[in-house]
Image 1 (tube, rainbow, N blue to C red):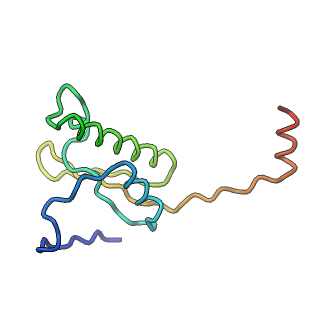
Image 2: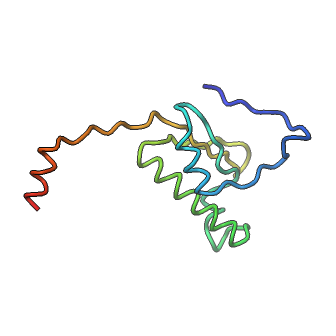
Image 3: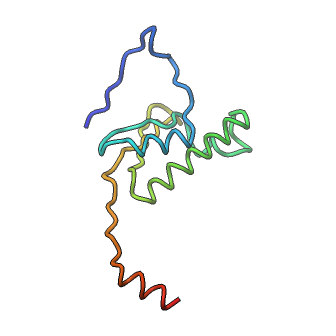
Length: 118
């Protein structure tokens, strides 16, 4: 699936508003497999580190929470995380939605056996 980039118009802001961790999670909930979201542009390791980041503290914390949410989504097999170099020391960080995992139902007899063992 290709990423569609809309041209900048009077109706499209030149710079998007920063994404929050909650908005990222909401995107995962509605994303179809193959959908892509650029959740940061810069150098994530530097931008989230207090002593070297040039971001204001509230922005750095917001970005840290967003990066943590992206990593948790990756660990839960909900997204692929990709970085694309866009310049020297500058990357676009993408989340690509995966097929949502299907959990097999646990048989009632197994639930009872587990409860009795506890």
